[in-house]
Image: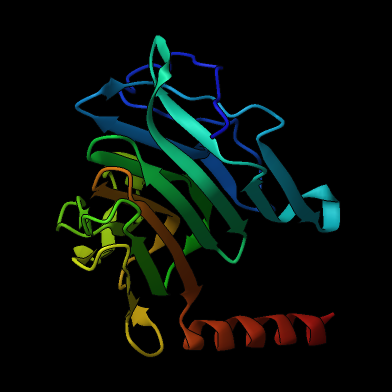
Length: 262
């Protein structure tokens, strides 16, 4: 495995962390860093900083030079190591793909491997803020899979506030659990079959969208789970907020009327 040797301390974070600078996305803003990884176990805690050769970036700028969407993905696997002990691996980020869209939408995909002992992983998106949507609807989805790599079975246990591995929040940063929870799902994925694989997926709601009922001005996602030693876990998550169809119709009518008056 490739080892990331660049280790720095970042404020209040006591576990292994990835923090990158914020980037503006169209009429939306990102706060709290592009993405944050944490890992901790009985082996210790540490801090990881992704270097420019570890991640690739892409995006599209619209009118005025502002971002319509921004994507970041891992160029190569990177180890998360104990602070001050670069040869002590807590876990490995095998892959990562993160997309922010100004619709607004947060897509966070990952693959990680636990270290030599059971490991807790926390992966947090930035806080994506945008002009307030007064009548909002939302949909969230998550699909997690696990693979046993040492022949002893594998278990992923959700560690969100309601024991879910995926937490989607609005009006507050999910990394600090400051928002209102829209979804807290996938409490466990496991298999006792040696070298086996299992997966669980869920959509909230199962079909269509759910009305939120409150004005919404930001969204974010949090992934937090425990994973058995040496095993592999991966997941894809999406959190999308849109205006209610009626609001869109009123907006379109307003634009049409304004155009005729001109």
